[in-house]
Amino acid sequence: MPAVSEKQRKAMAIALSIKQGKTPKSYSPKLSKLAKSMTEKQLSDFAKKTKKRRKR
Image (cartoon, rainbow, N blue to C red; front, side, top):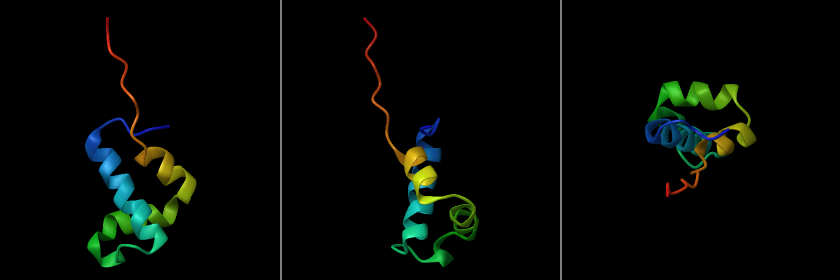
């Protein structure tokens, strides 16, 4: 399930980065806690951008 907003998507991307060890946990304690509670698959699904369809 992709994120609802762009802010949520960015937060999930940072949490995924923390989970993978690319970003230090001290960057954001709240997102570090979130990363601990979710799997990498869940985080990557939320961090994905969705293609918006054009209305005709």
